[in-house]
Image (cartoon, rainbow, N blue to C red):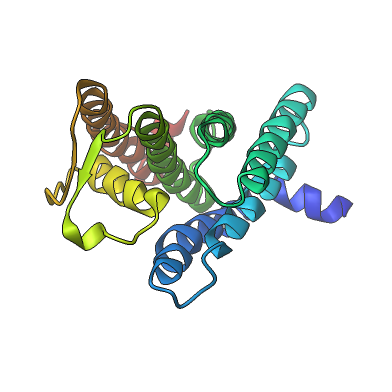
Length: 219
């Protein structure tokens, strides 16, 4: 167990966490929506993500207990709701992802040599941003039903999957137009996410990649 925790706290674990996030979001979730996998399997994968996050920041006592409480809160609210949507679950999840993002931010953008694992960590943060905004959208939709309008192709899909899709097409500024925000708060959130996505890619990740070629920039 000690070796596992040491591994999770190191940069070497970054690709593993990225793999869990990518497979959960873009493989398991759509397959579950299509009926090829158990409908609650995406939720179970998310619980694995929560557990990994707790171990990742074990060496920060305050952050460790804060993250553990948030993870437990997210899991318990999910279980007690029996898979149904929960505003409280979204609150716990947003806070959890924000905390984990801050930990990864410190790892990735702290002074020092830019490595492959830092680049992977930067990509992981980008996905965290998309997940965090999807949960923010979900909170608004649960508090104010009808905040989003989805096209006919979204019928039968889970709210979480629909909002993950909307979040990432907004973050990447693709904007197909098949899902749209319908009230001022969601308009503002969508614009802010698009701005954050562009600034993150062009400024921060661009600087990391440039630092690989010019080590002096990393100092």
